[in-house]
Image (tube, rainbow, N blue to C red; front, side, top):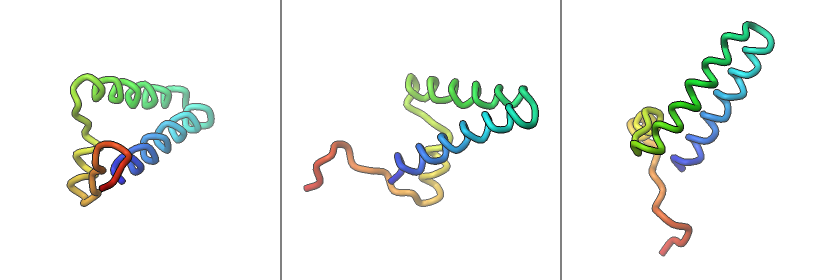
Length: 69
């Protein structure tokens, strides 16, 4: 479930920043850059602030793998 929430939130943030950069101000594109850098950083450090926040809000972490025993 955590992975689903994470993807929906990050995808929404990226789309929102692109829309804001087109219709409001091109500087909103820096928000998209920030999101991308955070995704790269989390790939190397295995830590993500959004994941920490979602867990504290009670979102359950999935088991590893596809098979459920």
